[in-house]
Image 1 (cartoon, rainbow, N blue to C red):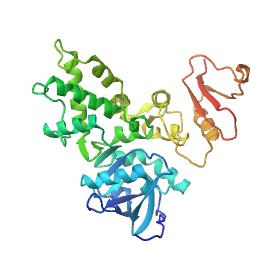
Image 2 (cartoon, rainbow, N blue to C red):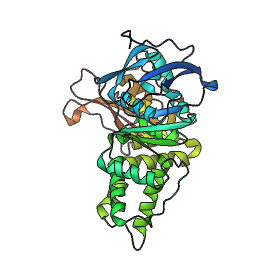
Image 3 (spheres, rainbow, N blue to C red):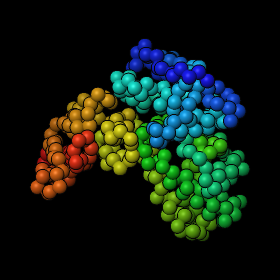
Image 4 (cartoon, rainbow, N blue to C red):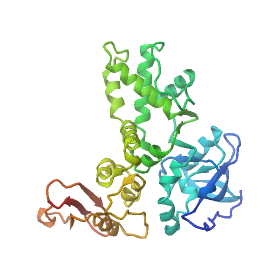
Length: 364
């Protein structure tokens, strides 16, 4: 592999073009090699959009990109290997590679396209990381049932499955549902907007429709007069995982008008989710927002500071009052806010000992 570092070429137009990655087929232990190409959005070939978590940015691995060295996070490297192992090697969209992360102008333009990038993907690939013993059983059983790649599965007959195995399947769903992947803010739009999704875990892959079908069948069984899934803990936990919450969000988004949700509602739903850049608490939901008719839609702009973004976000709403205060450790340092506040967003401002609090409240 050449030691020359890969440098992104400028896109002809960051609003009209995207980059796509082709993964070169090879054995599992071979180095990862990719080709990166720019394509006009309206004539791009079919592609798979990868959804994963970046992980620690300081932990990197090298891949060959157009014959040069490109450093990616270990999570990204592992997800690329999963794609290759599952023969998903044709065109892929991978944010860390396809967006020049060092160019804020390009990054802003491309982040504003992410909704359409995932909507227009042929397939969404959800890479949650490595297996544990519980998820291995889950994937093996779905493979044995012949539905691992069924993208139209709606339910699964549990009649022929022994109760002990049902318990293990439920625990596999709980283990899968507790994976840190499901806590990230960016994955909501990636998961919700892709027309169909395949789940990558360890060396295995299953369609997410198969996961949904199994989940629904186990829930339906638990509601029956003689449930075969008898462990109450497993039934409760299945409903309580971050994955279950994300599945409910996807259903809400897909059933809503135009697949969009009002901004204030999304703030409530997505506020607790994690992101490495606090500005992404806003930018990470923009593709899902149904804007009010009298509001100019907010767009991703990484030239804005955290405080500037907070003010810009909240001042969008005419008829609402903006409250800002620096929490200096005493109650009277915080300006009084009216009751029924829609949402409080906390933006950590570098240099301040305490966070700045911004809240938006109806002007009653």
